[in-house]
Structures are given as C-alpha cells and as structure tokens.
Image 1 (tube, rainbow, N blue to C red):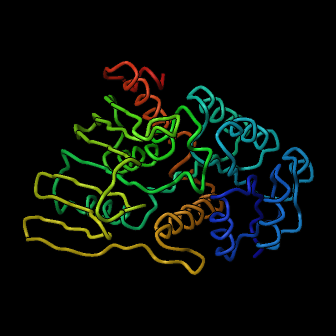
Image 2 (tube, helix red, strand yellow):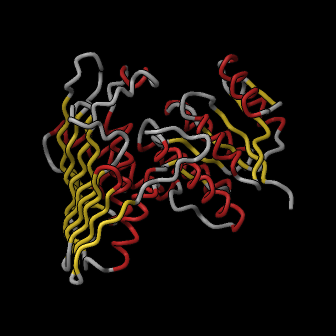
Length: 344
C-alpha cells in the first residue's frame, strides 16, 4: 500500500514534534518542507531526511506531489496558507490558534468547504492520555450526570525561553494556552452559550495577559470554570499538566498532579495513574503534549483515509475559537458575552 505523502510549512520550535509524529506513522511520509528561514529549513530537512525544501509556499504547491499539508506557522499566516491549500485542493491541518480573528477563521472554513477539502485544527490537548481517561470515566456514567467542572492550568514555567515571540503579543495566555483549556471544557462538557471572564498581567516584562479565569454556561446545564496562569509559583512545578475536577449526580472525579485520577462513585473510590507514554523522541516534562501530537496526527490520517471529518475540524474549532474571542470581550467589558452573537 502506497504511503500517504505530506508537506510541512513552518520549521520552528514546535514543528519538530510534528515531524517526529509523522515519522512514527508507517503509512505517512513527509516529502516536502517549507520555511522562510533557511537555517531552520536546513536543520529540520537534515534531521528528518527531507530532500525537497522550499522558502516559498507558492513554489511548493506549484510542484505538488503531496496528499496533505501541515501548516505549523504562527497565526498571522494561517488564513493565506489555508486558502492557498484550498486553491490547490490539498487537505490541510492548521496549527492553533486558528486565525487572527473569528472572521478570518470563518473565511478559512468557507474556503475549505468550497474546495471540498478537509480542514483540521491542530488542537491536540484533548488528545492527551489523561484527558482521554477523564472523558472515558465521564462517558461511563460512574459519577452520573455532570453538573459542575473545572479545567485548570497553573504554572510558573518559563515558556518565553523557547518561544520568545509569546512575550510580545498583546494577547497571550487566553489565545496561546487558554484555547487548549477551553477546548478541553467543550470536549468534556459540550458547547457553551455564555462566557464571563477576567484577565490580568502579572509579569511586567510581557505585553499580554498571563492570568485568566473564565466561567462557562454550557448548553446542557453544566457550569464550568477554566482558569489558566503562567504567574503561579508552586512548591512543585506542575508544567505542563492540566488538572480537572468534575462533580456529578452520583459522584466526583479529580485529575491531579502526577496524573493521579481519583474517581468516587456509589461503589466506592478508585485511584489510578493515567500517565502519558514517553515516546522515544520525547522528553519530560513535554512528553504529555508530545504524545498528544502523535495521537492527533494518527487521527488525521485515519479520518483522511476514511473520508470522514476529523474531530477537531475547522468547523468544530470555530466554537472553541469563539470562546477565546468571548473571553477577551468579556474581560475587556467586564460583562457576560453570548456565544450565539459571535457565531451567527
């Protein structure tokens, strides 16, 4: 059986993880890479043995010869690159955040739909092994019907050393990290219809907010809190773990530090460790995120081969992106924002 051929645009900090993930899939081969920075292009090309290297995405698409493209660039370039892929009818994966604005994101979905190509957003946090374990418990019914939840990511980790551009944007934690946590909330509790948010900047050396707390009203009646911080100094640094609390009609669930999952229900209490796998190319503490990259890429290949829409399609991710926009609007106005107003 012939391998599925892919191309990668963007050879920066995080894209190396994606290249490792593609390399692990026996039925996928990355045949072309693209980056405007010749040094990064050379490093990634040499490391992964990719001969076709481009500094122009237009030139790469003109040459063709690939079944999908993985867009791993920064947000400002996403719309142009997705629309370029659509014009060549090449299925596309787009790194989060989806786009600079919700209108851009809607235009990207429309372009993909018009071209008849699948578009997936690389929203990988819901693919983390601990989050999948939480979802499985929730779906099992052991704690009954959820009525309250919390998705929490609080850390003092220096993310700026590896991604210095994060310190320069007027938007930071909600757009970069909160988007993941909000997507987890949607994954676990369903779509939300209202958002109330507060945000602050604690670190004086950055331009954007580094702390945010968001209250969501979900369509099914669940109330959830999503809180994120890169200004929290703890005795033990939990980066990059996401903590989850869920209260249900029959019991409770708590995902805590070191991936300890405690489930309490009518039949008693169980405690398990739902740690991610440490892949051969991964490194702690990043291995949780790195494994989720491999898992979402496997999902993409399976859905592409089957002709089915991926779980984190552009259409689905509009709802996560709308939560991000709602959070910024709510924090700015100090009022509750309706999601329906943003999505219509």
